[in-house]
Length: 253
Image (cartoon, rainbow, N blue to C red; front, side, top):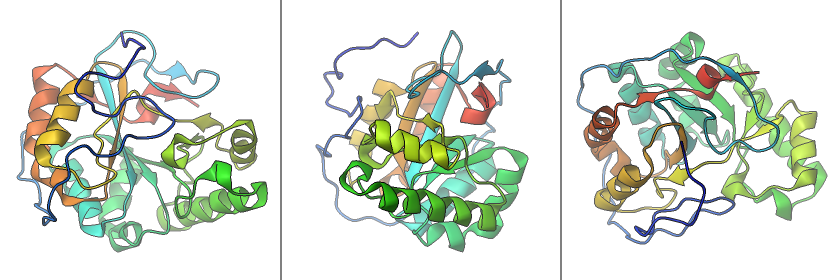
């Protein structure tokens, strides 16, 4: 059972609305494609109704971990995540910021995983503005453009899950999102804190802090360090007896 409370002493980002600034900056590095690993077992779980309001964790007892991946600012990192999923069977929910080119570049590799349900796509707006700082009309356009892109490119529209950039949302934004079918604001329990460039060591510290049963954890396809530690992330998941799930695996919608 996940406990609510203050952020862990490690300093890794936990609570929405805003992610913490990286505490350990890393030099620029190159993407390292994951080495094939033993498959991650997919453990079927009973699906439950989506709770009312924002989702921050998977309800009830269990051993599921929802690792959700945002943005996609680095096309090579998007590609590395896709290969990670393909090589290991890992299940992810990608919150797509549709303006980033990686979602076009890797369509041919990603679409079969979307069609099989191994990777789920959800809406993270068109180009990642702080939705509470723009007009309702501009916010509506963010959802319209990203929804149309997902539908045209992958045959799904990402409903009903949306993640507000930076976690910034209010009743008006939730209403605009719901008008487009995005009725489930999806936040998180803990973060890999890699929206900006951080060291591999700090990223793994955050994974050890937040990879727990029934957690929703946020990562980002923005910078290469995560591509260097896929093996270590899998080791943490296996050591703790966790199974990776998509949000659709967990929730009836």
